Length: 309
Image (tube, rainbow, N blue to C red; front, top):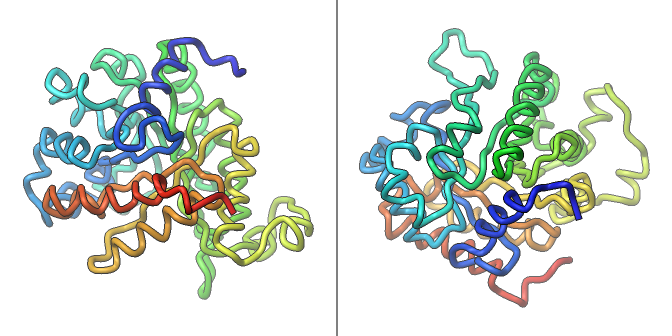
C-alpha cells in the first residue's frame, strides 16, 4: 500500500523469499562490513580465509541466509560468481577508524548506482543519531536512499546512537528502548524499508540525559522492564511494525555466542520483529560452525511454538 515502485517491491520479495527462512516473513542476513570500522585484522584474523570475499559468500549460502550485506568492494569483487546465488545488499557508508584520533562519523564509500550496477537488490547505510555529524549523515543517506528507490533497490538503515552524553558511569543508554525507539522513528521517516537496531537493554534514557521530550505513559503503561516489551517499543516506533525491525546479533564473545544469539532471536520474534542480522559470531568461526550457529537462530523463527507475546 506504500509508494514503493513495483521494482522495489519485487526486490524486497526476492529478499523475503530466499534462504531457509524464505516465505516465512522473517529475515536472516549475514553482514560483513566490520572490516572497515573495526579493521580487517580485528574482523578476519580469527579466521583468515574470510579475507577472501568468495568465502564470505560461501558462508552466507551455507548458512541459508536471505542475503549478504557487505561493502562495495567485497560484493563487486565476486558479483559475477555469486549475485545470482544469493541477494546482495551493498553498505554505502562506513566509519573508518584509521583516522587518529578516532571520531565516530559515517562517510559515503559508494553510491546506489554502483550497487545497482553490480546486481544488488538493496542498499544499506548507517546514521549515528545524536552524534555531531548526524545531520550531515541523515542528509546524505536520505539522498542515497531516494536514488536507490528510483533505481528499484530497497533500503536498510542501521539506526545507531553515538553521543557521550548517552552514557553514565553506571548505565549505557545507547541501548535504551526510548532513545533507540526514537532513532527508529527517524529512520522510517526517510522511507527506509528495513530498520536494523541493537536490541535494548534498559529504558529511560530521556529522563536520565534530561533532554528532548517524552511521555510518562511510555514508562508506566507502554513498556516494562521485560526485554520483549523493550524491543516491542522499538517495533512500535517503526510505524507500528509496518517497517520491519531486525536486531543485530551483537559482538562475538566466544563460548556464549550461541546462547546469546538464540536469546536475541527469541526476544525479537516475540516482540514482533522480523529477524536477525548476525555477522562476527558466524564469520569468526570455521564455515561449518558459523553456518550451524546461524541455523540455530533460524530455528527460532521456524519454531511455531515461539509466538508473538
